[in-house]
Amino acid sequence: MSSSIRAILSRASRSYVLFVAIGLVVGLTLAPVAFQATSSDGTVAVVPLSGGITGGTSASVGSMLEQAREDPDIEAVVIVSNSGGGSASASEELYLEAKRTSEQMPVVAYVDSAALSGAYYTIAPADTIYAKPASLVGSVGTLANAPTSVEPNTIIATTGSNKLSGGDSREFYTILETLSNSFYNAVEDGRDGRLDITRSELAEAKLYSGAQAVENGMADRIGDRRSAVRAAADQAELDDYDVQILRPNRQALFLSRNSYLASNAPDKRMVSSDYFFDPDDAAPTFLMLPGSYVVDTENEPTTAARNATRPAATAREEVRA
Image (tube, rainbow, N blue to C red):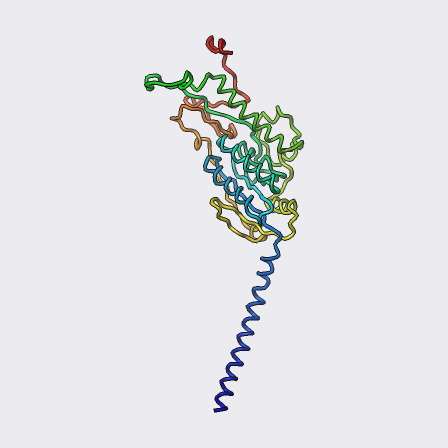
């Protein structure tokens, strides 16, 4: 009887020792991970801006910027631009979201392939703009397809003297110039004295390489996304930090700093102006795209704000003036 008890106790003792040994091994294995997870000072969020800027783009990118503002762990944001611009109203919406974010935390922009027109409008509030030497930057301005005429025999009745035309042609050009002036003001405000070109030179809507943009003050430094992420962390005073690639609808891809810096995210996508124009739409479409994206045709005339020639006033318009 006593020998059976001793055997049972011996087996229990060996099992206990084995259990403790396994626990120690597992604990030592997971300890560095746990330590790393708790040692981070904060998170740098990466917000991709890719492809043409539409209402859907402003909604998705805007939701990511809002997510960054509301997340207590996120201390800085990096906007990675691979966009040639797009809709004027959507670009303005993104500018306001980026500006709102920059008032709350450091915002750094990184121009990967391009930040043109509406995309540059979006990143204008950034504290620092990084670009590669071959990145494309600029094209500050607005263009639109001229409004087409409406056949009177397709309309039964209207209210308002301008219901068919939307107003005389001078009002169309006034809208175009107003949008462009808002764009110029946003760039000058965001650059805060760092521009080495005049407002008239800015309004020429030139495209610059990343190296040229650094020289004329439209960008701050030559660098890659590693540089941009580290600059954002430095501005937020983060020594140890994680990187979070944000996605729409509050989805996030959580990566360690080293994993993100070694990756190729985010992807690059560009689109042409055909994506924005509706040939059957009689109303003008205001865009913030490089003029080289647009091919003028007889049926789809396109007007840039700076090069627009105001038509002479008709006798009826002169009476109104």
